[in-house]
Amino acid sequence: MKFCSQCGHSVSQKIPEGDNRARFVCTHCNTIHYQNPRIIAGCLALHEDQVLLCKRSIEPRLGKWTLPAGFLENGETTEEGALREMREEANANATILDIYTMFSLPHISQVYMFFRAQLTDLNFSPGHESKDVRLFREDEIPWDDLAFPVIYDTLKFYMEDRVNNHFPVRTRDIRYKPSSHK
Image 1 (spheres, helix red, strand yellow):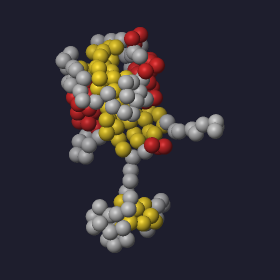
Image 2 (image 1 turned 135 degrees about the vertical axis):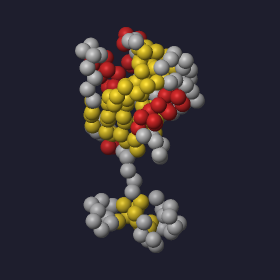
Image 3 (image 1 turned 180 degrees about the vertical axis):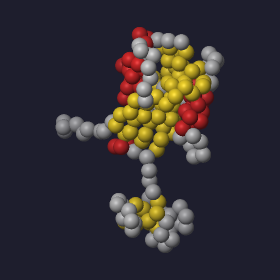
């Protein structure tokens, strides 16, 4: 960041009074510009013993399968964002059942929240970010072609939890561990 979004003057990094970390602060109007994690909201959309997956038509992870999810927009709740992403990526309609997984990825400043959701109908099709949208039974899931670790973990948790029909909220911190290889 080089310029203040409030007045257009330059910013510098410093620790504001009463804070504990460096922030971008305007050299003119003293506005503090906080940079906080981004929230990704999505759905684990269900129909009988199947889950809905979307094949990505965009980077990152073009051509890999994912749950419909995306960045939360200003002014919407996490549930609203998850349902919007369902409509955008899968042209699907669902009813939220409950929060299911939450992953913190501090190395990329993101928090993922997936809701268990019930499809309200089977009228779905690829949205502008998807090449394909399909329902999969557990033995049909393309485990080796999933886009992100949080998708894999959410699906694995679900397959384990549905055996007992008990779906606790699952949380996990995923920290990047740099490779020791050069």
